[in-house]
Image (cartoon, rainbow, N blue to C red; front, side):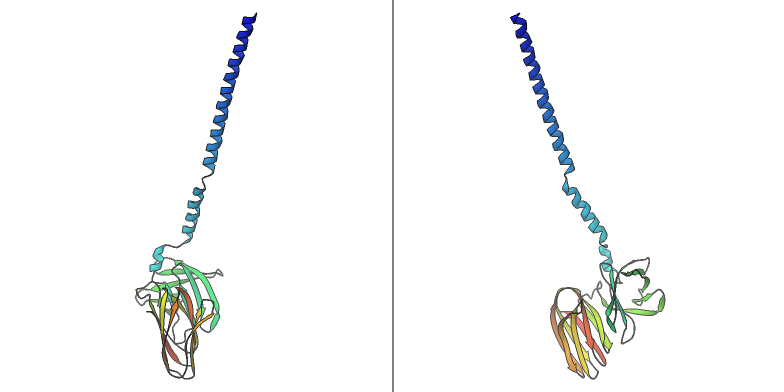
Length: 245
C-alpha cells in the first residue's frame, strides 16, 4: 500500500513541475507579445516625416525665385498710383501711392504661359500677363495699361534699385540682402524734400533726406533683409537709388 502511494506522490510532483514550466513559458511569451506590440505602436519617428512632408508641400518650388515676374511693379506715369509686388515665396502685396494705409495682400501662381493668377486675401482673383519682349506687365482685364518693373528681386541686379517720381509717394522697397545699403537722392523741385525709411508696418527707421529746394545727398544705413518703404514728401521731381555697398 505504501509503494503505490509514493508513486502517486511522485506523479503529482511531476505534474506540478510540468504545470509550472508551462506557466512560465506562457508568462514569458505574453511579456514578449506586449513588448513587441508596444514597440510597433510607439515609433514616434514616423510622425516626423509626415509633418515635414506637409510643411514642404506648403512651400513653393525654388524655381519660382527665378521667375521674371518676381519683383516690384508700378503703373505708368511720373506720379504712379498703384504698385504690386510679387514675392519669391508666391505672395503678393498691392499698394497705392496716395493711400499708404490701403494694402492688399495675396498670393500668386503660374496660370500657363506668361499668365499669372493673383488671389487677394479677400478672395478676389485677377489674371496678369507678362510680356518678355518689353519686360512689362498688365492685367488681362485692362491690357492697355502696362506696369514697369521697379525693383527686380530675381534678376542679376539684386543688390541695387532705382526709384523716380514727382511729388509725394510711398514706395515699397525690398532689401534683398542683409548689409550696408547706400541711398543716393536728388531733388529738382521747390519746397520741402523729405524721405523717411520705414519698416513694413510704417514705423520710421531713418530720415534719409531733409531739405528745401534743389537737393542731392547720400545716406548709408545697415539693413536686414526684408520689406521696407520709402516715404517721400516732395513738390517736384526726384530720384532715389538704393545700392548694397
